[in-house]
Image 1: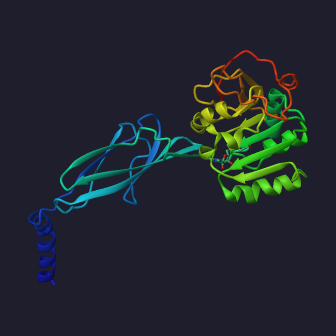
Image 2 (image 1 turned 180 degrees about the vertical axis):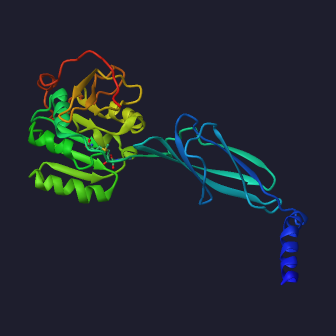
Image 3 (image 1 turned 120 degrees about the vertical axis):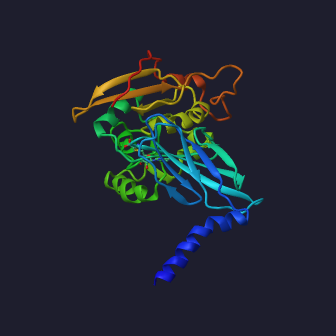
Length: 313
Ligand SMILES: C[S@@+](CC[C@H](N)C(=O)[O-])C[C@H]1O[C@@H](n2cnc3c(N)ncnc32)[C@H](O)[C@@H]1O
């Protein structure tokens, strides 16, 4: 027994020497992550790395296993950035290196082509949806879209209480569509007017949005910043965007109000009104054959209102 233990101890002791003899050594990977009060989860080559919940310094250092000399390695680095309790940003990079090298990968830099963003489902209370529809002056002439639609409460209220012509929702998760949205649309008796599609806000094109005359949102600042340029290009002059709490990147709202909900909580609502396109930009509402004349449309446009900004929670 003692002899066996001695042999095992000898083997363990000589393993690094054997690796060194074969020219094997580890590499060092330095992962730079956002250092604001943000939680990050790091996975390297499929292995989740334990780390303290809050990252204060922006560099995490990892040592690989012993690697073969002169061979190139490519490791996948995945980081989930959690800037608040409702948003997750998924960022992936590949890093290549050889044994003994130290490489640094900067996971703080946004890459719009590959980053994914998700926010969790939190429904907007019905009375707050009504305030948003009042702000947007929704009428029977409006086509209302909600990107990140959840149970579609915004579209259902717009159609039922404000007589909107049609509602279209886009939702990332099929289970929310099947278990929340579709049953509520059915129970509300608006199946003929409210439609919900599976889709990612980050994949929305101008074509997907151009039909909307009103867009209602509750999606977090990070998704809002990514959606903002698409909306500004796609929507026709006079279209209104109303957001529960969150902003749209550097697009300044025309109006911000604070309201107290039936639940006693404060709610901040922002509204943007799509301006006339500048003369050098192609006009979205340039009259097409058979299209109604511009004068007729203008009558329904809400007036521009003063800008004011506030944030809740
Ligand atoms: C805060 S909830 C708002 C739901 C609804 N608009 C409301 O105000 O009641 C955000 C919704 O967006 C969905 N969502 C999250 N990330 C998304 C994405 N990248 N693309 C589309 N939908 C997304 C969530 O599943 C959730 O249902």
